[in-house]
Amino acid sequence: MRNFRLAIGLALGLAVLPACGQTTTSLLNYVARTHSFSGVAMSADGSGVAWVEDGRLYAERNGGAAVELGRGLGPRFSPDGREIAFMDGGQLYVVPAAGGERTELTHLTGFLTDPRWAPDGKTIAFLFAQNAVHGGGPTTPERARVGVIGSQIHNQRLSLVTAGGGEVRQITPANINVYEFAWSPDGRRFVFTAAPGPGDNNWWVAQMYMASAANGVPHQLFKNDEMTGQIAMPRFSPDGRTIAFIKGLMSDEGSTGGDLYTIPANGGAERDRTPGARFTVNSFAWTGADTMEMAEYAGGGSQVARFDLASGTNNVQWRAEQRIHGGGGFSDFAMSRDGARAAYIRADFEHPPE
Picture 1 (tube, rainbow, N blue to C red):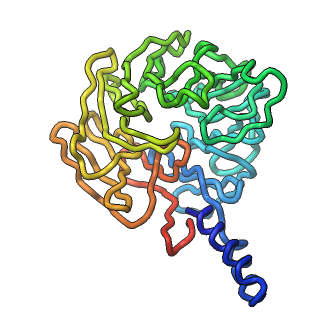
Picture 2 (picture 1 turned 60 degrees about the horizontal axis):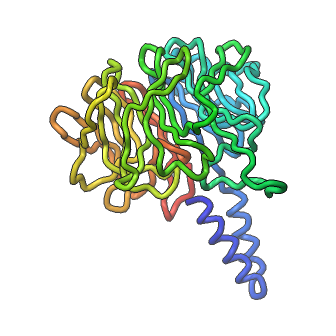
């Protein structure tokens, strides 16, 4: 929405330039004062929050003053909330959440994204496309291609590095592109969505897989019929027995929306948990064995609700004519593990992001 506002402001400024330069100056000053926010993260206990503002990484703990941590993107708190993993200049770093010296964990050539801590805090997983300039998303621009077009495919692979740095281990096969992933609660497995490369072509036909963290050999968990919708955000339940995910007709990777589904983690039939709902689930987080907090689109606005899997009850806790999206490539919403606290970027057609 911020880009939309900027485009309107600049267009108006150009339109009135011949008649009233002062108005143009005011509009451009307004644009210059607009800040860009992204990458909201919250610690598991809800005491810390981190975000990116105009390309700079900030963190706040226990309601204290915000601390600037330097440049960075995609912050993720460690399980104990003491450190933050983030990306900068194509590499992975960690920094104390209270501020201090950053540690560079990787020295890679390619595209790195989506760092996620192991439950024990000893390892960080991420997606890495070696020698690529971007991750192969359908909405990401790429360099002009020369030579034999299509001769190289740079798939994103699930990769691991210890929290102290060291050798990076790519564990998924080179012939599939991984789009999203999640750790199991015991840290021994991953669930992920993937398809044969190139990644910018095949997100719409991605399937769901399970793999051991030790060897990364994929085993198909759910065979999705892409004609009925795409799948996104596979996540383990706290006991590791169930996988929840979103399925629906989606335009591009990151523009998540649809019904909430579950499937047994050892395989089996999927189950639509929100059939006929008058809302669209765009993200969710497990808060218990049978409960989760969900961010939803409804009636042109957004809402946050506590969903009970056993009863199918969707208890709306907050609603506004704003955009709240907690998953995919446009994440601006995060919450604590128990769902009691949340942090989000808010914006509407009358107010810029804050």
